[in-house]
Image: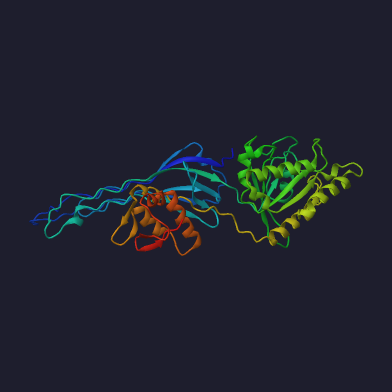
Length: 428
């Protein structure tokens, strides 16, 4: 079973409480406080494991918790830190906050590890509170609470090339011909029920990763069949090879098939139609008479003026496969398209503190003041000199309700807004 989506609950560890105790030893008349600090709670950490390629491990277990920190002890003994919880995921996994669907982190683009939730800090023992006027402190600091979050893990395959097309047009056979992948090949619909990756080695050039995306059908963009399950795996691909049953072995019109699949791609995400395509006219070995020339000419006349190469191949006999591979390599080399990395929209530690945001008007200085732990953390996380960082910060001001609060206080364009040493002019 290929699992590419899972929703789970995660919890970091609670910080251990500080300890209250006093030194008691023979011949020591007045021992001072010696209660130790509590241990920090364990973090929730996500790590990429390149040895796995599905989310199957999360199918049957839905709750995960890091270890709590231990309480501090006598004689200044520090409590043991809680054990970190490490979630192993395949490369290409996008982690989202389950309720809002906002992206927390995209585990691709070289990112190997990410601290999803920090454990609670351990409380200070009473040894920290002794002063000349308070020599016998009988209190200690409690550990900070744990943090919890429900997240959705969604695997989006990392492939350079995606094989698309109707069921039973020969995508799996092409993949098995050109790569190390061994998909099941049979003459019936939906033989391939899961995306399959294969590494294609190109003599004298760099190889690439090709994905066989299970057969799309009309209505896939609305979820007909398993449309949504399949379509999400083509979002990262740089180039499509559109495989077509050119010989109409199942009675369908090849030109109509191409138009139907392209329409489904555009309905799902208009940006997909901006990706380059190669049309691979498969099953050319079963044409009778002059049918091949007629069909190929018709499709070339339709698509090559639009910049879409059309190639005749036969996955069964190997005809044209080598030329197809080199054409793919050439087009990949000509692309200057960065890898698709989903931008962060949600920082759990900051979101947890949203309730502590305070927005006020400082009449004396004629400034609007924004304070609170969430803003302080946000400024620590974000590089405001970077365009993406500043854009993310602006979105946060809107989604957190801060802009709405400023408007309620009567802010106008050009007014000064201050937050922890930073001042901005307010503009819509």
